Structure formats: C-alpha cells, structure tokens
Length: 95
Ligand SMILES: [Zn+2]
Ligand SMILES: [Zn+2]
Image (cartoon, rainbow, N blue to C red; front, side, top):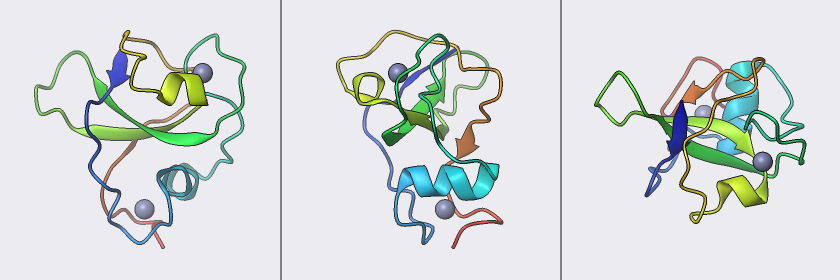
C-alpha cells in the first residue's frame, strides 16, 4: 500500500519533470493513473511513499491523474500491477 507523500522533494536529477523521470527509468509511457481501478489519464508524476515496511519515508514517483495527485487525496492505495514505483533521485536513465 502506498499513499501520497506530504511535501515532495524535487526530482533534482536533470529530468524536466517527475513524470519524465518515471518514464525514463521505467521505460514506459505514462498513460493511465497508477492507482488500482482508476482509468483516468496520467497527468502528473506523483510523489508517493510506502505505508508499510520501511520507515525511511523514501519517496517514489508514479504517474497519477489530477484527482489522485491532489493533496486532498490522503487514502492509502494499491498500484496497478504493471506500475513500477521509481525512486526519487539520480538514476541510470535520467537525463
Ligand atoms: Zn530523473
Ligand atoms: Zn487516478
């Protein structure tokens, strides 16, 4: 389970946007929102954290629709199976 992170660290890796950071490092095009069951279009690279396990609050990027990227969306959610959460920070495929 994941939830939106409150306060986002910038991707700070050379990618123009969080969604570009996700696309480059997942080798996918962001098409649909990553929240399981949501069929809206992916508009943003959303910053999320894992609700369980590590207490590090490590942030990941996934494509989200406008609704699910909004700060008022505070429920925890599961991701669509094909979606790989990409950690924030400089990665191999960053620009
Ligand atoms: Zn990047
Ligand atoms: Zn959505």
